[in-house]
Structures are given as C-alpha cells and as structure tokens.
Length: 174
View 1 (cartoon, helix red, strand yellow):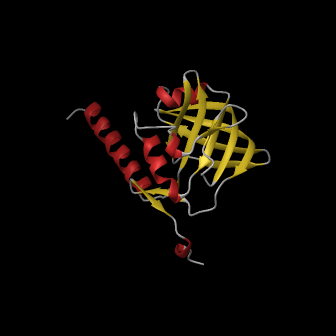
View 2: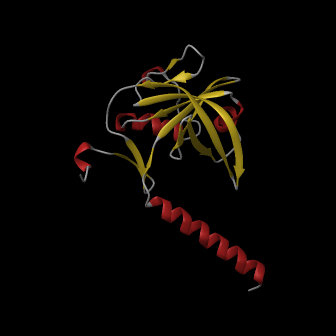
C-alpha cells in the first residue's frame, strides 16, 4: 500500500468517525426558507446556532450551493423556523429533495416582506444574510436577526442518531 492510499484511507476513517461522533450529539431542528427566483424554497437544518445576542446573529450551514440551498444563499433574507415536535412531518419533507413543500396542509403563509412563513413553528426569525464562508464541502451562513415572531409553544424537535425526536417536558433532569 502506498502513502497516497494510506492517507486516503486515514481521511475516510476520520470522516466516518466524525459522522459517528455527531450522531451522538443531539441538535435542534429548523426549516430555513426564502423567496427564490422561481418561488419559495426551503430546507431542513440541524446546524442552527446562536452567535451573538447584541446584535442578534445566528449561523447555519448548507452542504450544497445548488437547489434550495443555492436559492437561500442568493437571497438577501431568509426565515429560520425553530420547530416543535409536532412539525416533524414538515422537517421530513424539507429534508428530502423533491418531497412536497409549501403545500396548504403544512400551513404556510407569506410574510409581508415576501418570505415563506410557517406560523405553526415554535419561533420564526427573519434574518439578513451578512456573510457566507466556504468550509470544506459546506457553506457556513452568518445571518443577522431582523425580526422574531413567537409561534406556538410546544416540545422542541431534535435530531439525534439520524432520527427525529421530540424533547419532552418530563425529560428535564433538574
């Protein structure tokens, strides 16, 4: 086995270990939407994190610059919807390319500013994309929060070990 093959094997092993490590780490689930050139676009993300409270800034990442992700990256604003466990079917739809999106049964409306809005989410944050950074095969998006709308209270939707879960009130360890 030559050095190049050994290096490729080591890199592949690291990728597998990295993925396995993050399967053990639960993350909140969001749907990110924007108004694209051909209508509303959106995707499911488990990479949303707060960065700063003053000014309010968050980050998320997308793994491609095509399709819905590309349209979100090109939009000046987007809406980050923090989901409740009751929104699991919407999270699933927006996680699969070609699945039904923005259908009436999902409860979508349009903000006065033009972005698609899911008022059934726990929280909706209208954001201005202020920076993007290419990192490996992904793009990190830095967005300033312009407006926050409270939606419906409920148990948060989390992603853990490649499955969606509802974080229940009784799960608090105190």
